Image 1 (cartoon, rainbow, N blue to C red):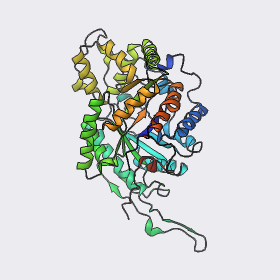
Image 2 (image 1 turned 180 degrees about the horizontal axis):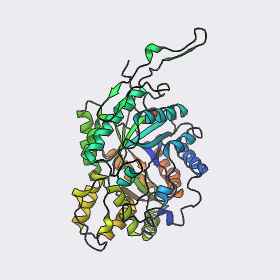
Image 3 (image 1 turned 45 degrees about the horizontal axis):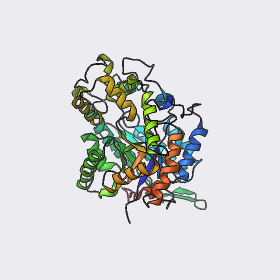
Length: 443
């Protein structure tokens, strides 16, 4: 079978551009109105997208000088708790996958295993877990800690967390439920198992208190680019969400990461690489460029610096915004792989912090594709055909119009080229992604 392009929609209320919420095309209203998310999900499902992707953060961004004025925008205040949102959408949709972000640093494996298994049952096999390690001290302080775990520690913890959760999903074999009224036996006890996990971070007995998920395991997503991330994801992930700004960088990462997947004893296509994509779409290339300029004109550089500070776990407000970007790479304690590159590139370009804040607010360092539906489809096709990606997480800069333009204009163009499905071939997310169902460790 030829490779199939995969597309996920990044779910937000106002868009991914940090000034997108200020643009006249962005619709206001209640960011927690389930009807808004229902319409968005139905639209994405009608376009046959693989899944909805819900990001999450466990604190308001207060790292940048403790200032909420520009740091608190649509992101924390318009971000419903992912599992609650997707549980509602599971009964309002039929086929599209449902990806929820849940931290391995501030939750317990048993609870997460139960939550994700429930979502997979409710959705008849459409759940995915974006397992993140979280990024900053603000999150730590909401869970009884003074400081976020170090980079190496949180990835070591995450590796054990993943193993425990998948072990819990396997504690019920697929045919464990008998529900035999005549004999009175509800389960075959020989097909239930204790996890009996004892590790450096967790001690969990099991079994889980509900049957194995329809997909065996909900699809595992991981986001990042650092060496520690790549090592963990190559062994465990089934979809990754990296930050790549250019095709050349994406190709180098894709080749290196797929090589690590193979070295870990897995087929290269066992993990789908879906970098984030900012599409700015209009009827013509010039109109799209004009729209991009309008969005960028609304940027307050401090909003980019505040977002960066929270993501890096480093307060940029201690530096003069009109001074050159300082080399703080050794002091980044949050999202390290991503911002080592961002800071390094800014230093090389000779930017001031204000210039960096403006640039970051415009794209969050993701690839921007600007133009007519044909032009954007051309770029997507190039990244896909030239081994830069297996697909993309679509991050519209403003909402809902940015998503609607992509779904109504770009997706049909990709379908005409034979790159993207016209109909779902299966009913589960694993089927959409071409992933096999994991075999239980007890079979």
